[in-house]
Length: 372
Image (tube, rainbow, N blue to C red; front, top):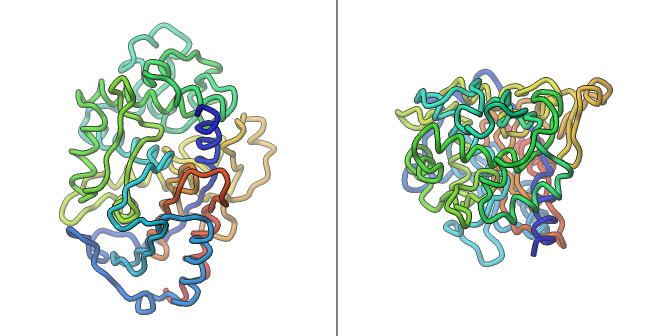
């Protein structure tokens, strides 16, 4: 089972991108969903229906469970396969990380924490150790320097732990924070301890109260490990249409109807620019498409690596301001401010089937969308 999980979490993380315009994505552009998404016609929304259907067929062949396309606040196309439907919830794996990041942004807006805080303020056992200088921001940026040997080893060990948070907190510090970027699942699980101490709530409860319920994500929940800790590096159970609500919240700069569940400046900080100066492909637990040195899930990137890395993008064919929440097995929440779209693809965490990458979902914007 551990080896299956290892392989799963390994595939879980591979994909990325970012897009946008200064005009699109402002509060009030397009309707917000009520109990259900308002439906729209794909052709009227600017899509070539035949091309859109072709991409959907390719994603179906990749064993996808669902695909949803939102433009200007309306659900213009959706597909469900493998016996699933609009209410079918599933594990979204590392796309959970972007939700965990958002909880930190909400807590900061409520003055429960500041991401510049030393994490040891909330994790007392780190005080007086080499981890004392790790900030919450470092945990959100994946440059914390916490122990990491390989992405398989990291994912398998934290996944297998009964008390994932205690295991994550107990790991040593490899290097000072800010020196190496590494896709560190174990380090991200320590956000459970940070959020719990800062808010006084279990992060799963905090998520329901502050994010999932306000957005009407009625089929979604954050899960817990065997010890009752909230899973923050994976573990969100959700649907295509619910994850589209999460993406749409960010497309609308944190606005939701007449409310502001997430501050505008948090959306900008988390997704509008790199969170550190090693790789341009990463924000606060969101993947970005900014031009520059691009780190990969499979290997750490040091400052020296970064200085010599080619300047490219995660998805060179896509706009630079497009961004993604990504998870094992090709779980994709794609937000493109420039075209005012959200695309969600969910599927099984399978190692025997082709795994779609953001390159494929980006084609919905770069090829199927023919009219601005």
